[in-house]
Length: 454
Length: 57
Image (tube, rainbow over all chains, first blue to last red; front, side, top):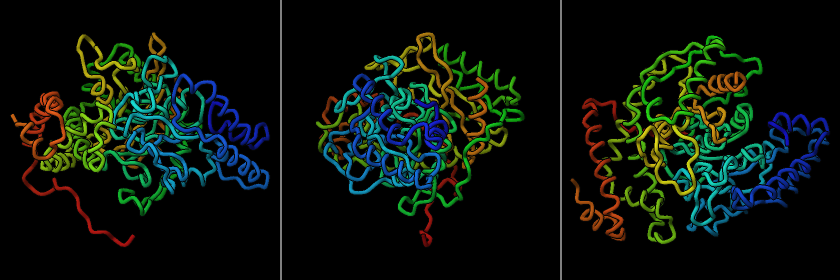
């Protein structure tokens, strides 16, 4: 299988491989690995083959849709796909077949990407393990008794195991960046409002972001170019020209100012993650970046706001279904019940203080180009593991997993998780870069340069 | 501390009592954190939830 989308794209155009052969490769890989990984809920083999034949004919006739033409991808099962079962990982929608495509599905189809199917996920996207009570646990390709992370766990597993080149995910409190970190892929969450959420099951109305998991930064950039854009059907999208996001191949870290937090993001972190983080900071400096010591504002407070906002929004969005509580997993139902007991005044005040926090972080970001942090303070926990021990302290697995990530959703800033090696047990480590609003081009440029340094 | 059982009886009567007991420490903890944070909201306008009229889209 090819290393990246441009590699596969070049092979398609040189005649080395056809779109149909690429699809067959993907199906072969799915057949080989999905039995143990459980990444897919629905595999759409025949439609994929049909699509591939049409796209091969287009290429032969000189019609080239761009870098995603003929590339096998897949969608987290919360994206509406016309005529294809879309369950949101839930029994509530076990038989739901939408009659229209989500906005990102429309765009990716127009770009020539071929959907291999719908991916397993944490139930209702409200969790971080993808241990799904209805569709079974997704397993980490690097260690089958460990979680791939969530809620876009199927997306992480499918990309990490080579089943597809790109998998679409969603990120409300880390749900793209967590599986990226735990599975060793790239995971990109763009600025809030850049990518339409039309046709995706919502969870956190002011926290949800849609984005790709890929093998390389360039692949993420290619995908972002295809899916970005104002959409009148999603009133959170912004009217901005879509710039080129693909990084220059010659980009370096020379002169790049990287904010290095000296607090919060280096506290309660496992030894392998901390070693990785320090190593990346040192190597970035050797490659010409200028490290700027930063004391970040209260991230714990950001996380409290994240929980409060999400409690209210998720309970409101799923309210019409809560009479079916026996069909919802215990962990998710507990969160929804907590949301129902939260007063509206808490939600409103959380949104008010959110604005003050955005201003604080905006001032902080004037001093550097990107902030560098570990993506997760730990590597992937075991399936069923409710607590983790870090530096002698016991912490709830979900809170530990989201600690460095969910606050970024509150701020709406773009963030990317990069694979950063593995720990002694072979579990992937993840590095996060956080950028300025709408500064994805620079964020991706720096991420690509960091990717090359190591 | 809030009486979550009383509140649940009104707004979420289907939540089982043992679930409320399990949730109580979490809800109490969050309540404390929020009370501390909300004390920091400035009185002056500027910390509002933004509402804008719909321009012609």
